Image (tube, one colour):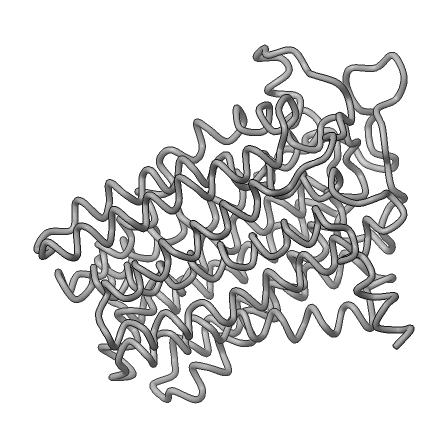
Length: 431
């Protein structure tokens, strides 16, 4: 009982418990929506390239807005930003529901909604990543971060499976559930109150301030290497975008089968997160980082070669496990090396890289599937990911040689606008 209280006692903090509940519901809803959108679009057009356009529609507004969103997250109340984002995402779900009700025969309205969703996500990610520090005391911040990550993985597991099951009753059922879940999430987040913590005051609204997060990441070769490695590995290895086509045309599975395929990476990630919670990485951090991304690429190759449903599930679970190791290390680096005063802006840079790897990776996968075919596109992505691992091991020796995580940095050095250069490494470009 005392062990349970030690691990979950952070839930006694009302604001954090409300945020966690809201984020869980919102993540489940968005995962359900992704299954419905992918299956509905492919059912309408039978064109894998259209699955890529879904990703590009979300990515197009993300990059120009992400850095501004980081400035907003540092300047305004992050909790209110998250609540407003949930509300607009609810409107996106309602729009998809309305389009389906009137009889959707073309896909451009879906792409339009995805553009709006991508815009909202640009503001959501840095605010939600940086808000946890404002909801709990510093003494339990580490536990709050770990629990937040675990709950997210549970939602990633539950959402696609539930979305695939509900799709059997029609896409309207999925979109109605998505709209309801996001409405509750917005309400819960709106109930989060209390005096917000202002880590560094209100930064000036200027181009120099907006770019502070980029300068900070560039000054940390280890952080730059970890974030850019994840960007290019997932960019080329984003086979999950092709799962609607892969499920129907290769595995001959329906929407429920697609739901379980989308769940498998989350299940692998959740099991890995649990293992990392019990046996955290303390030594040979750099090799663990490259090993996780290498596992992701190798499992992508297994997926591309498989025509068996069970093998495909196992390969996707291994992809999630490898990705979780990379996410864990990258998240630890960002949290430990970033001062609170610029956490939103650095989180925005991290979010921009994640958005590029996910949504732009979906477009890249759809485009290569259009050019070379479905299975060759998946195999090409796996090979490219392994190539990225080799290139980054050569290009970022400071990351490869990193043995332990750095100590936490809580504030900027007095009298300095720019962070100091990381010890033991010179500045490198990300490519």
